[in-house]
Image (tube, rainbow, N blue to C red; front, side):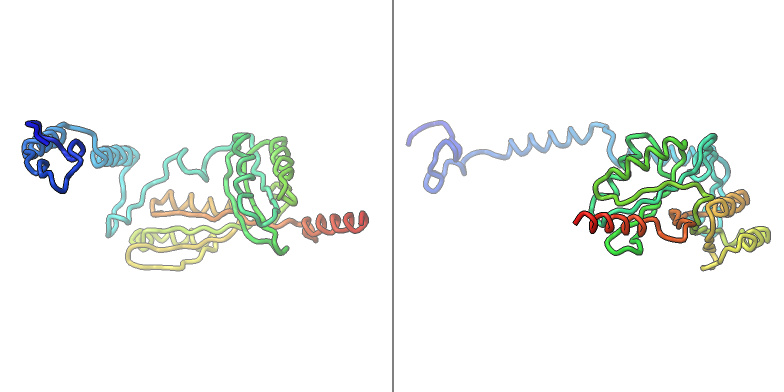
Length: 275
């Protein structure tokens, strides 16, 4: 094959014997490529690091505008005062009642998604949610709280009970059930030692200190929802709260028999009668 044109492997088709690919001058191509990379890198662009730095600066400016921060020993032990309107437990729900929905369902995957979808479609916010196995084998219990009107609570209950795998659903107000909730508060130890009122508030609510070190103090409190929120509010007003977390509400009815047991007994009776 005689030609003055330098051919690549795709053009020649005989790379084992041709050898013309070795004669190609590839250095200028690499040089042009390196120059293009350097030119592209020189252009100022918004990188992930720059966006993250910008976001951190904005957060720091917002925290600074909300009030002074109280340093203790380490940078992670900073007590920040609660911002009105930003603490979920302290939001105002004027004209709305806190309803507790107790739901029983089969122990199948995806049931929780079906239940929460009922709240989402009706734009009802879930305040707390607790899921656990019930005393009935193969049945799970969901305890959900939400602020809404009575008509909405009854509608939510009926819509949830229509789900195939849901056995029973009921809604209650606080007077109709026994309620319990647990919280953990992380307090600044130097502030606890310097202010005796903090220890007095902890004892007044019958809370329990479970961990103490030079940096922070962990306080556990178990009781009704109002007591949990009241303890946090009073301690936060003193500026000693570093972290605060609370569990979902757990509740049992005041009836002498579990409603689900009565429902299952009735279903078995109907099934035996039909057979």
